[in-house]
Image (cartoon, rainbow over all chains, first blue to last red; front, side):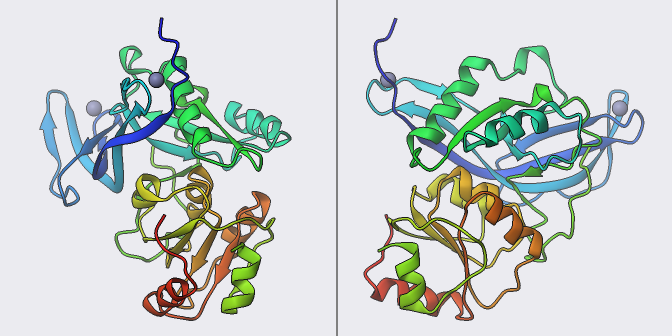
Length: 183
Length: 111
Ligand SMILES: [Zn+2]
Ligand SMILES: [Zn+2]
């Protein structure tokens, strides 16, 4: 067991796009990270029983965290991004937790994995805690702290209008009026 | 220098309500991903982006204030969200280049 009180810093930063695709057959959604320097465009394409069409490109980044003291490296290439809960749904577990945390001046951020959700790609509580430690170690925590929650808490993506901390629709500098649910 | 001292010095217009704090440097970008990767705690963040997602981004990396340059109009929902979370949004008519030049001449730099 390591005795190190890890001090995390961001490393291996890659900029690219999170691509959102929807299947016109089953309405399934999938997302992936593209490290190419330009957004994905193009027609629908068939893959097995699915017909995928690109719905959205969001400029984003991928990163890993490394401990400054012991060098331990934690890869986070399965993180699609972070979502800020806008309390759009009364029964949303994130919204309920957020109200509770707000009393302690703690901000809730939801760490998203890529879609579709698969058991083997879930962000484990251990890794969510590392993300949380990273964001808190670099800030003045006497003012406020960050809590990083799992996107497992969001039951229904199709209704959630939380804000992704992504550059969605910002390729044009025209601010989007209101984000339509992506899913 | 603190955020409130900066407002006095530069004649910036505060749009949200916030508690004063020390400024550690300046970060200039219109990309949230850039800010996530590069801004340091306590930095001023200069941008022309006004969509409300700048507020959670600013909070996540703990910037001391967001300065909206070039006289860009800021939606009310952005300002309300910032006030709710004690994030300073300051506004300037100056184009980004001029604004950053003034910040530099006040002794603020990257960091
Ligand atoms: Zn360590
Ligand atoms: Zn399908």
